[in-house]
Length: 369
Image (cartoon, rainbow, N blue to C red; front, side):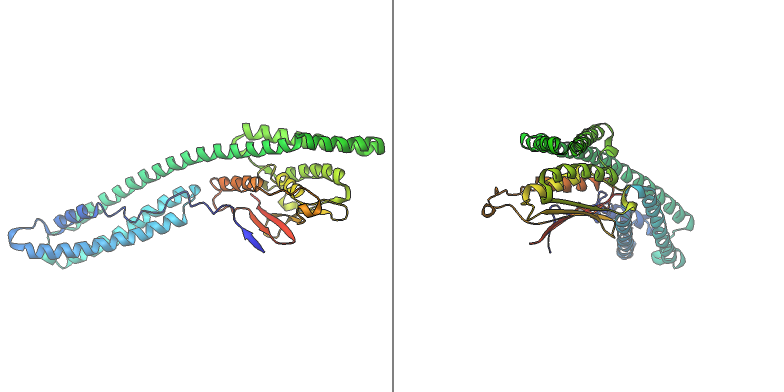
């Protein structure tokens, strides 16, 4: 099957450790370290001082490299905002261990072997270790503070973008529902039912009321309830799509078939509201619907805990006498954009998968726990 990804996966919100972050201060640290271990470069021991500088520079370079590897691993594997405390604790502990090993190596070189006539003492080395650890704690706190501020700012931006996407989607849905063409066909179906089957006409009016009630409730909640209002339970969405499908089946008769089979364990999962309506509307808009060639739409849950919406393809074209309608993918872009923005709050959430071949058009939606 041909697969298309309308959007690539967005990068992690917490940036990886900058590999050059340690470099600017390395020269200053090397000079201080030389002073602590072998003192000032006096006239009689320049050669020894130069040798000590090479040794200390090599040891510091190794330590910096190890710290960058460890810091990069921690930042990459514990990037979620909910893992901030774990990330901070691991960063400090890792730095403490690496620095401790480094100090033991220095003690063996300059205290145990008295290399280059060093007068370094254990007391001095302990002070250096404590100061170094305190500086690391302070640096980690500042780094996480700035990261938190960046995340908060991005969260505010994405919240507003997601609300706009929801409002745009709802406006598009409302325009499709209240357009003169839709109202004419709906009321025409109702008029025919009143004369033929008053009981079915009453049911038709009830389903129509449920459709508009859901649209209004969804619009109200998305504006006033923040992030929680931007999602709805699968149970509510399926109840709405059953009412919406009833209107379509009444209008198209045997030319329209809608099958829904979703396991009960997924009913409390969340999805962006009106997502199913947009997909069903797209299927109706772009396919031929006849009793001899029925449009069949399946809404099914998968064993992986996702929701699959599939319809048979029988595109409208000039040879069938129907209007040739080119898809602009506005509805699909709207759906994928919502999921893309939701990854800000739920890292790791996959994007919808869109697949198409000569027989079926399929969209697989992730369900949010």
